[in-house]
Length: 124
Image (cartoon, rainbow, N blue to C red):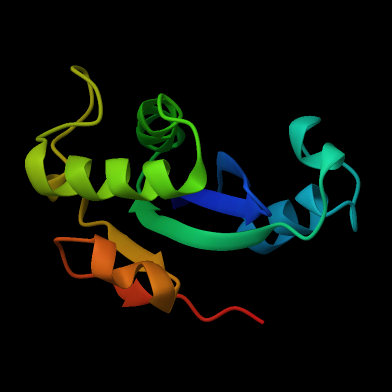
């Protein structure tokens, strides 16, 4: 299974996808080698949203691609909410969003922005 995540550091955000979130988060925070070049410029990356349950890497990549079209963490959360509520697919070629049986986890302070059921993301 794969997931797509939105990270926040100050006013900056980063969207990525992985099948091992904790390892990837450690890489983004320079605790392990291998993080994205962009995230190495900033510190203390915190997950603010995780979309979990993609059956394949290509499905997760389609979601990641769509979410990266908007800049800024707040706008990205709003965009995700609108896509999940209003749209049928991430891209023309992707399976329907509803057929993917995804779960959306978000920090409590962002839950009110979603028009669909979300689960609370607990983070230390």
